[in-house]
Length: 130
Image (cartoon, rainbow, N blue to C red; front, side):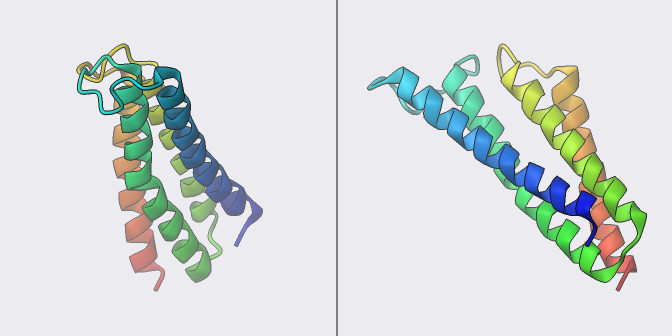
């Protein structure tokens, strides 16, 4: 496994934990108020969804990166690892900068589309490198 893939895997994990810590920070700022907001403009809800979305995709991306790295030493794995980091950070930034979850912005949309494309590419790469 290359150093690039290891660093990218670590960065994805760090992003997931930072987003979780951001949820905790927002809950603490809220104090004893509503801890389960439904307003799409609520900063706590935005933080929860940014973390939740990352938790839905990052673990699978990490597993696929590890599987692909175990099966191949191709530079393509490094490219996909870097792409995974870029799209997941882009998506997280896009969500956290949103005024509301009701509207999509370019960073969020690019990050989402990139997540699907990189995830599919990793899955296909895992299959073809068997």
